[in-house]
Image (cartoon, rainbow, N blue to C red; front, side, top):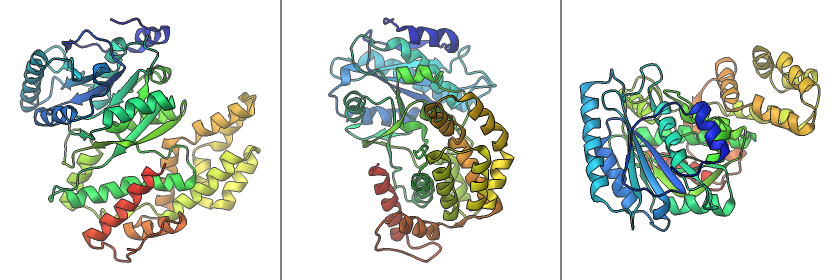
Length: 434
């Protein structure tokens, strides 16, 4: 075990209760640790390791890939057998592979009898937490360089420069937390239309937040999340959510540090359908392919205009609670109704009474109008004033409002695949600019 800073010791004493057997060959200490939850992922783990093997090894001696093989006691025999196959494979891999010119590999057994995740909390959040908490004792805290926690998923591959870009971004820019770029492969002809539709949905929402001036305008995808150890401990670690653990983790980080973008490192998540979480890529692909609802709809762009006007009023001005509410009513009656439903008057008045400086008030504004409340506002506007509108009508309005020059504008409800792909590329390129 490495020397542990006081903050890490205190964190582990208070929040680090979930411990499982750790298997690894190396006795080295690390500067970057990638935590990868794995449940019934034998085939994908071999692909992921091949992707790592092809990656730039400039900083390989300081990097550990830490899998968390997990299931519940109640998981199916098929899942348990696949996990045991994964454990056997990783045992053999760790036994045979030297760490001199390559990344170190280890795994945590949260799958074998007696080590399973508990039925109440068991899921991707807890699996990430177990791995990230274990990683805290494996860092080299005396190197003078950043100690970086990286989240990834078993069904991903990564760009060749993935590790180098992350390592250098954290150490040269001295950042505390970030997300890397992502791009679902579109070469699967069965799922390509579903994935393209889902990617547009994801990128449109973040582009709308960016247009609105929201401090929460970043993608919340588990396989793209990164932070340093100090920030991880500061926010009391990963949560145990069975789904949306990535959303809540990044939101909590954003309330304490700035979420940066590392655009030159790319994660390629699988375009597969999946049962592993109740929403996200896998479920959206399943839903698209089932044709149970119209997937070519997006939040009405007017909702982001309301959000933009509210954030300008709320974040850029210091005024009484009553003036905020009267200003909200002028922006849109539904915004005023939403704030009333959220008990803004009572809560914000209390915040003003306990905040003694302008700095404290600004921080409280970002905390109160956080990512979750922002999403709730967009949903409230959807349900009460601005219903979903056709996908490409929304995109046309977004591009016009953001002065995005395009030469492929379509008024069709569902234009040809090539045109849809052009819309996607424009959104993707906009992400790269930040």
